[in-house]
Amino acid sequence: MKAPKYTDEELILRVWDVEEVKDLMSRRQVLNMNNERRKELDTLWVTEPKYRKTASIGSNWGYYVGMDEIRRFYVDEFPKSDKNCATMHPMSTWAVQIAKDGKTAYGIWNVFSYETFENEDGSVDGYWINENYAMDFAREADGWRIWRVFAGSD
Image (cartoon, rainbow, N blue to C red):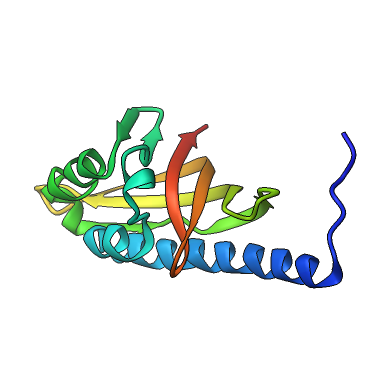
C-alpha cells in the first residue's frame, strides 16, 4: 500500500493532532489517578450521538458499550472501597495513528501500573499491573475525544 501524500501544512496538522491525542491521554490519566471518573466521562469522552452509541470501555473482565452503560459501570457502580485506593497508570511507549480523513485516530500505550487497596482491618494490598491500552478517538467540533478504550492486563 502506497503512503498518502500530504502537503507540508497537512503534515504539520497531523503532527499536532498526535500531540493533542497524547495530551488527552495525559489528562485522562490524571483524572483516573484522582478517581474523578465522572469528570473524565463528562470532559474527555465523546459527546456526539453518532459516537456515544458505539463508545466502549473494556478489559479482560468484559465490555460496556454506549455512554449510558459506560457511566453505569465506570462511575455509578464503581466499588465504594476504591475510594481508599491509590492508583497510578502512567502511559508510556505510545503509538498514535491519525486516520487518512483526520476524523478518527487510534493509539496504543504500554502501561506499567500499580494499585493499592485498604482492607477493612486497615492493612493494604498492592498490585503491579502490566497493561496495554488500545484506544480509538474521534474528532468533534471542540477537538479530540475518547471514543473506545480497551485496557488488557498481561
